[in-house]
Image (tube, rainbow, N blue to C red):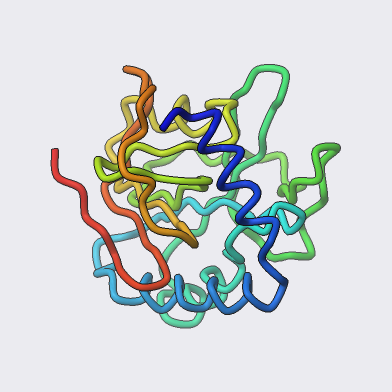
Length: 188
């Protein structure tokens, strides 16, 4: 299956989820996430959910991390749609977030984080059996992850789509993907 078709299919599946289902599935994703060994993670980059797109509620992850791993620095992105690049900022709480013109919650803090990142939770619409992913098609995360030595972890409400037919050399593969029922590790 090709990315455009997958994007359409998976967007439709997500839109059909009720808010209760999104919350329940997000809790199951968190349950799987809590099984990961985070003992070496000092800094974690996490996307903030776009509620209108029924994305996983990553605020559940943030709250869990603050309670169980308070030493982990939490970094969140801000997207620049003119350049298709992201800047990265310390998460200081929901009170320090504003919705952008694209309806994306972003940090108001101007100070950028420039340090190392040990683990990145990557947004996606779908993933395949090799760890390739389909996002919204702007390439923000592929550019961000290019050449970065970090653990790349996808979050998906749904199972693998098999094989994505039109992957590109610049597409960055996931190291693992968390679904509500399991953690899937990808081999090189």
